Length: 134
Image (cartoon, rainbow, N blue to C red; front, side, top):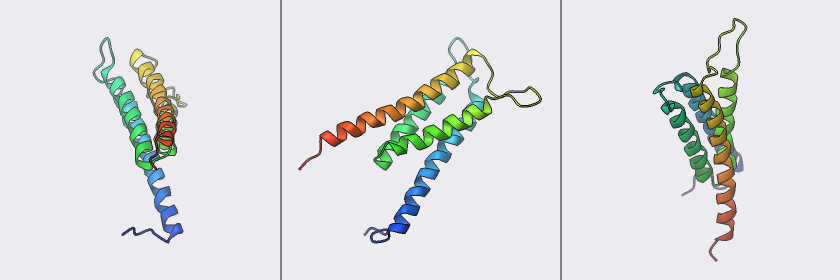
């Protein structure tokens, strides 16, 4: 039995809470990634690439779980806002995400991964609309 059947207010509140949780998940991934992106540094920054793959997967799974593109936009927005705020220098001159190869991989790759997750969720949504059964 569906607990929210007949209660639009409860359903709306639950949906808003899930989108808020997805946004928060993306923000937490951005926070953790901003401090860990330089781990496994070498010729290829492994931790930065792993962070990019994780935000891509989160966006795709969020879209799948919510059955909407908004499910991908919420974690992408949380990740982008958090990572870009943490990449800005503060008044004393310190910066969390440095202008290094790993930092560029993390910021540019993560942004492209988040936007790619949103774009792929559009593609899946369009394909899913054309293959409905009767």
